[in-house]
Every structure is written in C-alpha cells, then in structure tokens.
Amino acid sequence: MLALLLALALLAFAFRKLLSRSKSNSSESVQRPPSIRDKISREAFEHTVQHPHPRRVLLLYATEYGFAQQVASYIAQHLSQQQHLAPRVVNVLHYPLLNFARETVLLFICSTTGDGVPPTEASDFRDALDSNQISLPPSLNVAILALGDRAYPHFCRAGAIFEHLFKPASTLHPITNINQQDWTSIQLWLNSIAPKVKSVAPSPLSDYLPAAIEKYANSYQSPTRYSRNNPYMATITARNSLTTALPKSADRKKVIRVQLAIEPQHLQYTVGDAVAIIPTNNPSHVTRLLLAMAVNGHELVTIPHVTHALSFETALTNHLDICTIQPSLIYELAKRSSNASQLSLAHNILGSPLSTSVLTPFGQTYVRQRHVFDLLSDFVSVSVSPQTLVQYLRPLHARYYSISSTPLTRPRAIAITVDVLRYTSLNIEREGVASSFLNNRCPLNETKVPIFISSNPNFRLPKDLTNDIIMIGPGTGIAPFVAFIEQRIAQNASGTNCLFFGCRHKAHDFLYEAQLRQYEAQRQLKLFTAFSRDGASKVYVQHRMRENAQLLWEMMEGGAHVYVCGDGRRMSGDVHEALRDIVQRCAAFTRDESEAYLQMLTDQKRYQRDVWVT
Image (tube, rainbow, N blue to C red; front, side, top):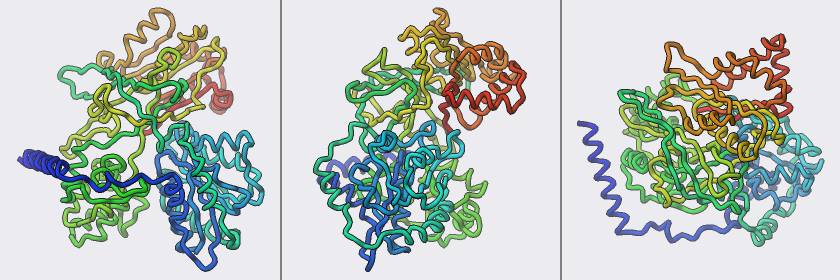
C-alpha cells in the first residue's frame, strides 16, 4: 500500500512539474553564459579580499573529478580569512596565462587518475614542463598536495610526477599524499603550511594576473584537447547485450556493448585508453529528492563549478551527485534537528562527539545502502533550502570505461563494455548512474553524450609485433583486450595472443564468446577460461594461470608483455600472487627474488595493470 501511494505521489508530482514547465520559462534560460575571462577571473579572485597589506599566493589545481578544485577553493578561503593573504586560484588548464617568474609561492593541488597519471586537463602543462618549454624558477617556493586513493596501485603518482618536473623550484614543504577525501589530513597539512606560506609570500606589489587574464582571454581558443569541462558530443549508434538471462536465476547481471560515433579528425585515441562518459541522473531519483524536500525544483541555486545561477532541478539532474551521502551533510542535518531519534541516528553514524572525518562501522553501512533522498527522509523534521543542500553534494563525476575497439578497424567509432548496475536496497530499486544512463536513457542515433578520452600511457601494446602478450581480464576486465586482439590481428602481429578470461556462468556472462572462439579457431588467440559458479568448486583465472605455469613462464622469459585489467580490490592482488608463485616455482627463485623479477618486468613496461575499485 505504501509503495502504491509513493508511486501515485511521484506521478502527480511529475504531472504538476510538466504543467508548470509549459506555463513558464525558467529565468536560467535567458541568462548569458559567462565569458572565459569572467570564468577565470571569478575563480582566481573569489577569495582575494581587500586586506591592508595583502601578500599574494598562487593556488594551481589539476582535477579530473572536481575534488582538487574543491580543495583549492577551501585552502584559498582559509588563507584569505585566517591568514589575511591574497590567494589566486587557477585551473592548470590555463597555465599559459601565468608568469612563474613573478610568483613567489605556488601551492599545487593535484589528483591522480587512470593508472597513476595526471588529470586530462593537466596533460599540456605536464608536456610543457617535460619538454622544457617552461620551467619553474629557483625563487619559486612550491608545496604539493597530492590527492589519490590507496586502493589503487599507483597511489598519488601524479603528484610525484610533478614533483620531479618542478625542479629546480624550491621546496616550501615536502609533498603530502592524501587518501580519498580525508579532510582531517588536508586541514593538518593546511595548518602546518600556512605559517610557511605567510613567511615567504611577497610584499604587496601590483598583481600582473588581472592583465594577464585579459590578454589570455582575448586570444583564447577552446582547447583542442577534450576534457571534463570541454567534452566531445558523441552519438550512440549501437547497443548490444553481451549476457544471456538465465531462467529461474537470481543473477541479474547485464553487460552491454555500446558504440559511439566520433569524427576521427576531432577525437583521437590509442588502444589502452579509456573514454569518460559524463552522465545525467535518473529523473525519477531527482523527483524523489525534490519530494523529500517538498520543493518544485524551480528555485535558483549557484554551485561552485557553474558560473551562473540555474534551477535546482537542473543542478540535481546534470551537475550534482545525488547518490553519495557526504558526512558533512549528516552533520549539518544533526545541527538543525531537535528530534531525539534523529540525533541518536546521527551519533550512530558519525560517532560521539559528532565527527565528519571517520564514519562508524554502522555509518559506513548506512551511507552505502542509501542515497541522499533516503537521508532526508530519515531527517524529515529538518528543513534545508535548495541552496543549502547543494553545498553538501559532490559534483557529478564522469565514469571511465576501457575502450573495446581499435581505430585501425573502426576509425569513426568507439566501443565500450558496460556492466549495467542494478540492485535493490531498502526495498527501492537502485542503479548505476552512468550504466543506466547508457542503457535506458539514450535513444540510438539521437542522444548526444558528452565524452572525452582519458589517455593511459602505462597500458600500451608492445611496438614490436613479434612480442607475445599475456592478457588477464575476468568479467568486464576483458574490455581493453578485445581491442588489443583486434589491433594485433589488423597489424598482422606474429607474436602470440594469450588471454585468461573468467566469469560466473559460461551460459550467462561469457562476454564476447563467439568473437573469442572465432579467434581461437583461427589460431589468432590462446584462450583459457574459468567459470566460477558452474562447478562444485569455484575456479578463477588465477587457478588457470597456475595450471599453465610453465607456458606463462616460458612466454615471460621469451619477452612477453603481461597485462591485467579489472577489479583492483581483490582480483589484481590474487593475479599478482599467482604470477609470483609461477616465477618462484618455475625459476626456483625465493619469494623476494620472484617479486624482484616482477618489478623488473614493471620497470621494463612488460607488466602493466589497469584496475579499478568499486
């Protein structure tokens, strides 16, 4: 009965919104988009207030998802309000407007993306430093705050890359690595560095930056490198299921292959790269959130990454993450609540006293099972305005998919392999934001999908076509290897292509089975499979690797390149352990010698991994 009432409420709410849209035009539709000069100036000087003797500091950020930008803004606000400095915040994409010789302090906030590489928008800056087109002077005092995720193999690697490239600039503070969104550690870093910044920041002189922005804007051209802020608009031309539904099975796993049309003169990629999809949120989930707040969505709000006001509904649909619950939002709701049960819930989630730095075990489960509208329903007595709520929502991130095609055979298309996430939590059907967007909300040959290429230089095929390759990719980890095999065949590579693939059921989720079997029949591929749930005992790819230890050892000794793609939380570690055991057994090495052997392969770029954590 409750479900029926909720469904009726959703339908009524949607109908009222449709009527209201037909009767009025949103004020956001008549607003003129800001110029590039306005966008850069607003961000640069947002936290530069008029102090009696302002000392200038440059904050340069490199972001893929938006978190480094958020951190840079927070640091700038602190330096302005607490230290009475004049921080200027600039996206690394616009580095040409900067004159590093006229700067004294540089705080560089950098995320790591992909397989330990700098963000897309930092690529030109990295290349300019690497080729000595620009250099940082010794008079410049630099501190690097590197942001990353310890679950990945190359934690904060991009920060280390820039630390090397920044020489011979002076080090104001040793590089500091931050795991995920650890605001407590960020604050500790800020507390330790603020006095150092203040001691070396220059005396107030005229700032060159306003005039530099003006000159830069006058000659500015949209970057040829597509990125999160400058996506390429692609069209979905094909969508095919790679899985087969099993009768009377609770396994709802669905994987699709999606093909996007591109113009090769505008968008180039290399096999091994990933494509980033910028999705929109499910309208029904947006409606649930609006219902929980008892608002219609027409309210105008401002958000950090958009320089003009827009409707609350548009912000929720296109710009904000409405699934992930931030601890700071729970804290804010608790502060506004006088309800005993709600305050008890907040303490169960955040601990006592309330803290936003670490969730309790109960809190970790709580936020994992819920979306933002669930949280608002649990704090139903608390009223927050749309503008207040958006301050506690993360930006809607792009989702990255390994490319499953090669430009050698499909120059006008990019194919990806998508695991369509569907699950039920708290009796509500949930779904993955990007996978459901691609599967359900993009009519073929109609919808324009914002995308950009995420280069992965550390996941590349050998240039020597006589080299053997060993590919290990269970599940959707097979995605790049479909492209690898296709490219090697197109190049007439004489080296052996060896693939270890695993899935749950041969009849259900053997991805690309017909294609792989054809390659195998034509002796273009050595294929080893593991179906974990088809037998009495579970069999994974690492079991098949150990069964073929001698073959793998001989291939590695013969110069083969080893590639691993897939889950970084368990699978990649299990595969690495299997490789180490194979080396130890076949070469009669010690454990340490076997690790050293794999490290040698890594150093030679013959052992490459592209893994992710869900």
